[in-house]
Length: 327
Ligand code: 5GP
Ligand code: MN
Picture 1 (spheres, protein in one colour):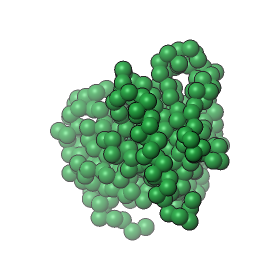
Picture 2 (picture 1 turned 90 degrees about the vertical axis):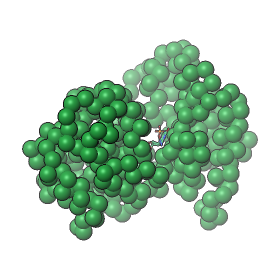
Picture 3 (picture 1 turned 135 degrees about the vertical axis):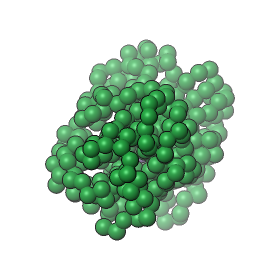
Picture 4 (picture 1 turned 90 degrees about the horizontal axis):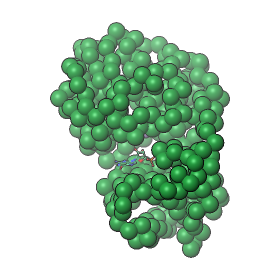
């Protein structure tokens, strides 16, 4: 393996420091958690002291993975650290954790538009998951790929590729996964733990959301909506919506999904997913959010009808604007 200069600087910075705090974006996903914990286990194997902190708890299914219940939840990084490693986060504010800027910041990410906020920045938009970079880091630190480290990297890749659905997947992704399996990862168990450990309330919530789903006039875009009252009536919890957004894409004709989740009056979290060459990442960016070509999000304010109309128009443009051979 040839080590990139950015990676080599990070290896040197890690070797010469002792106390690390590792954070990621707020509302962490599988790639956040997997990248953070794989790195935490690796650094601990080097004898380093490591604290993992996030602004929000991990999605409930991920609590079954090693070390996840021990992640600190807080909005401030207190204590003395020699470096802060920020995984999978386009800008430092998105961690939702204050005080990280006091430390030597190492920024490791694959989100287009990363603001290079670290003293060291290692950014690769070609990686299907940030954890692909963590894989290289573990190798560059010359550490054995333990089962725990490998499982977290696999968890990150599985979830960040939408269980191997997104166009970010490369031959490298499978090469890494092959090595993870050789290191003892059980891909069947990981998939069961991530995708098949829901409770009944969550399934009913999915049912309610899908019953209320709308389709745009061209039949290509699904519009999904949830507010507190719908969640309460269905008997699910409001926070338990991870994964809903992928379901409409199982319909052959559906090319993209936009999910509006009400947070306050006239304020919504927007999540989008798309197939193939349809770039919804740039739409999220237009509204102050971000993400990738096939998975992105933002927060918006305004009356819901107008917002839905705007997003449908933007997504239709994105669908019609993709390269002709993929239509
Ligand atoms: P999700 O829809 O699962 O919340 O997010 C999908 C992808 O978009 C993830 O890679 C996530 O990091 C990114 N993303 C979602 N919301 C935002 C946002 O408000 N700002 C930025 N920069 N990225 C976001
Ligand atoms: Mn990611």
